[in-house]
Image (cartoon, rainbow, N blue to C red; front, side, top):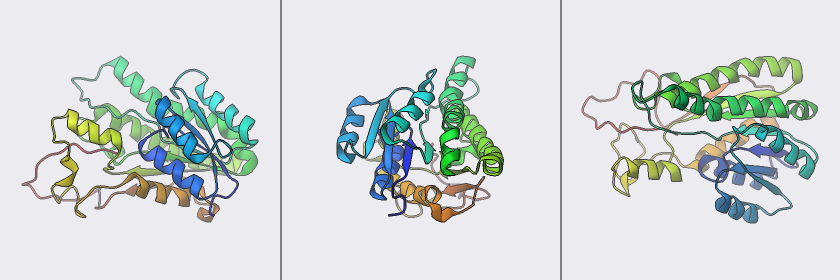
Length: 266
């Protein structure tokens, strides 16, 4: 088992990519501290993992003191902390006309400031274990889709933080910081978002090849499989890296002109 005896916090782990990462980490031998907003789903996942190997905190990670409480739970329950996965995020449509200051501040609070605060709260314990941080970003960090303006800004800032802390914390604290930028992933929330945009309930079964050369989009479990490498000791001294997980070259691609535009996101 690649994560035997490690203790890992995974934010936003009651659903989607976070849930998949939590399940895969547990299968690899880790104890998991779960966090999210959905009490029912959280309780179901806790029961599946077993209370001897998992703990649950239902709270908005951007609330004052929430990162510290999450770290305290990990230490109280398991006595150590080896890794943090910053996955919790708000994915919300907006452009320059629909984005106001309050909305932008809320997006940054959850998607960028909360990960920073959790890293800071966890740092003494991660340093003791020479542990690591894995941030879950988005391919939208590089520019972003037209109607994912605020979201893209927050993911761009998260990527800069990964690069910066991946250098500084590795040198000064022995803590690695890396990031995965998923492309389009079929999570429960993404399925609902597209239905809310007016698409059919089975929209994901018939996608233009330009968006899904494989005939489908990514599964949360496929992101989770990649996450294990960065959380395990086998990734060695690698730090400050950002890796795109998509089924086509994201940067510099020249898609056909006769495609239907579909807003995509992690």
